[in-house]
Length: 328
Image (cartoon, rainbow, N blue to C red):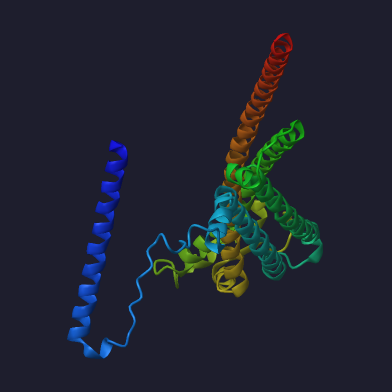
């Protein structure tokens, strides 16, 4: 009886408190109507509490879907892909135009005989075709590496449910690591090779600056300042004239072909350097992904063994229960 009496007393207390709250609300509404007589015709509608209405974050919507999709983006692979595309585009585009400008400068000023630079023209034309192939290959290779980054990121594995790794997947990841390493070493050579025309054009430009300087400009020694392109090995020693001196060299430096080719070779060299950095970045990403796949495969094998042992234990327990029930 005592707990029932305490429960009834508590219910009476709650009802009295609710009546007090309602009377206070009615007093406040009456005071408002007394101060503003025109508001008597308005009806009072209680404001719904947070418990009465559903929160916009309680149900999945477009915002949560966007956050979930953004969580599955491999940002490291995305940055490396953008850097790789930018570097290859700069190297291929600027290098192609700069090679064409170099051939024009050689034909007009340093080698007037076509047979002297015929081999160089063929080599430059072959290099332009190689540039087309490099651009196409790295466009596809960058997309493949980005896709590999998507499918080996832990966020993507959580989005697509249970993750299962296979020996084939680990082999493919290891193959990408090896191929990216080989391409990185090759692009180091390309980066060094692309610095050769920059060095050559810089020597010609610095010589022209010496000619334009006030100390040598207008003196008889200007015509003795020369540039011999044959010493770089791009044209044979019997090429005519092969060497340009004085004011003629200054006129070459003032041409649009020389200005554009010089700066385009600099940009192409910078693009090759950016590609090397992107491949190093890819190599680090692929190595970490391969290590993750290796650890995930070990964890998967451990979970399979554990599940098998638990199933065997449950079978033993069920059989023992059946035997006990049969005895009883």
